[in-house]
Image 1: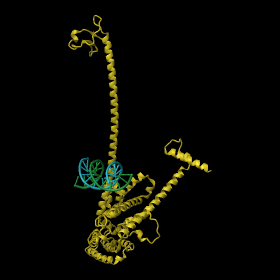
Image 2: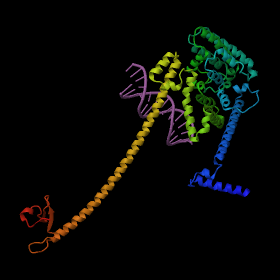
Image 3: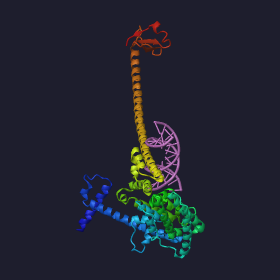
Image 4: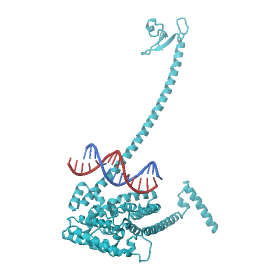
Length: 475
DNA sequence: CCCCCATGTCATCGA
DNA sequence: CGTCGATGACATGGG
């Protein structure tokens, strides 16, 4: 039995080697190996398992690194998962991992929460979200923080007393107030990021009740906005984002994960002392982004295709995210592909604010231009291929011409040779009146246009042709 | 680290 | 004069 098994394995290995070397076995390989499919499936399952395990390990490693980062900076990162830290530890799913990373800049979490429920999230809910999810990572600073919050709140309230008509302005005012106050009150060393980065608020203050206070103020304002029949929180925050208000990240950070990546890089780039760590985290983060983009795709396409697809998805989803952030009434596909009339009608019927209008126009322009660029490049490539084909055709024609030229030259030589022989033959047959042959150095034969052949003396060939009339031979 | 390639984006031009 | 498509130039990201 063992012998049979060993023999079977040996034969399978041989067939496998032949098959890999593309040796024609005459029939399909499955004939030889009935277990092939099963083995492939097992291999695939094994790979999938390994990949999943690897991803889980990576996620875990990233979490550890992030935690380590915290310890190094002496900061604790609030994140959705940190709230649930009491729960039994389990491996983070892809979305969880991404969510944790997205929470790196603190406010991103709240913006994400806002974005995740883009239908209509009143500011009361924002305040609710902010407050219970804000553990105090620095209890020892709580007193100071509280004092500062009071001052900030007072400043915001002062700002709000002269209520601007534009809700976005209110938010900008709030943020400006916060940032001004924080800049003056705290040393840069307390800030989450260095002064080169754009985060203005000290991290601890953002983490703590400042946001709650801030949200309360926003809540107050929302009531005013509602009274004014203006768009409530969700639209307001969208405008707020669109107006590039400095919440400590650039606008892109608040819009999408891709740009958040940039924000993360920028914010971490000051950690020159741990460059390798940073690069590692960057790559981990990139992996996470791609994982969250489309996990199914990962399983089905080849590595090369996968990479191309990942790049495409990451690039292509920017406008999707922007559109989502501003709650555009049309899908990006519709924005790009609707006919002009339908598009114009759509954007006129849907009452869009300035930011939405600008974005929807930009998305359409970019989308159209993207397609135009693609077709332009395709035309260029087609033209290039056409020119290459033309070059090949011309080369072939040139070769044909060269061959013809050589053939003609050969034929010319042969013809000349024949003519020479014939000439000599004719010349040899010619005799004078005494029966002597003509000296070829003194005479020559010349063919006239009418086919008559003349025997002419060489020195006075043309001049004496007719006058001498020595001979007139018809050949 | 540099180069190459594919793709997206912007600026500009002409229809 | 505004819009749109074409295209060159540049940026970005991955191999």
